[in-house]
Image (cartoon, rainbow, N blue to C red; front, side, top):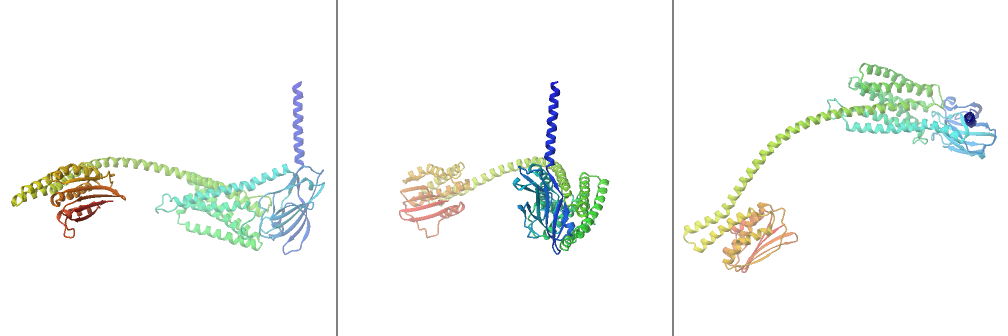
Length: 612
């Protein structure tokens, strides 16, 4: 029996909760009666009992004006908790008072053609101290013609219940619209970026941009403006100019979408394409004309007729497109056909519900179905990317095979070139050695032969020439192993080879050579030139200077290598034409980019070589 008591208690508790919920819900009142004072511009004010919703454009034929609605309601008792008022639509601007106390202002009712609060639902909190048993809610509103201004039925009740009603409507009308707006902006930006970077596949024109992305991008940007208008309560332009802009954005959207569909179907290559473009431009232009005339002349029938004509035109286009997609079924074309058919159906529904029947509370449905075009564009981008990736993969495979073949051929060519280079290097080295021997050793031996043949040279002179020849030969052999750029090693080698000669000639050798870091720019050829220059300077001292002291200095000053050969011999006149040996010094200095300075007088001759 215990379980029966528990079950009975649970049922009673559930019933109590349901009754409490029903009682709470019952507190929310839907107010549909109002005493209205209507003040349309250009007409006398009049009072009337009206039933809400009150559609200002319908009742006043698109003329602007003001109205004061007194909405009475009674409560069984004075509430102690906060209450709220929910307006499904109110505007264009309004002032709301309760029992003589101003609750809120939505824009400035004294400023026409500016604010627009009728696009989304509105919620007004009500302090409980302002509520009594009998209450009068006063709504003073200004309605601008063509903005769907007016006053919907009101919901009054506890804050939690009323705010939930407001939140539901806000999510569908405003939040969802902003999601669509952001989605359209993203799709539009991506489409325009693709248009800038992608070329049309299968076209014979190199570098021609793919217009399917341009059409989709412009359409989505226009649609973002059209749908995002729901959140713009203070438009940047006055009315009705802003209304013309929004209508033009709507026309830009469906004209761009038509071009998008045309490109997806491949019809843009047909010879009728110029006529299609001209027709869409005409449709876009007439949207501006129709909206301007409708809003400035207060003739809503003009814009309604234009929208109806556009609906008929796109219904026919949707039928033709759907038939074409079914006859040549491709995934992209079928998806575009389905999206287009659904959007045309939503457009017809919106035209009937809003423009023909004049519902004040209804919102457009096409803003939600428009997302399908963005999704279809995403599908097209993905399929094209996959196709391009497959082509790129095949191309890379072919390129890899060709590169492999070329690499094998290049390796064979490199091997042949390397072999030729080694042979050329050996030939070049042999030619250099022969040239150096001819210019150095050969020259000295030839001089010795001429001295012997003439019979005028002394034994000492011939011996000196042969010694020079031998020293030259040894230096040439040493030059093969000189480290590139190492001037210190070069001088040390010369000292090693020639110091016995100086000692035999009673010439004191003074050595003042610092350790010099190798110079990167002096390669093997430059080192040989420098060796010949120093050897020539030293040889001149041995043969002609009649010196008793020879000083060799080398160091680095201000980043420049300074190499000096100094003797205390008889000297020579630097102003007279230079002998062959000194001319050779200048030529070799110029060859390695060095500076040669000569200074001579009896008792001091300086040969200076400067290398940066």
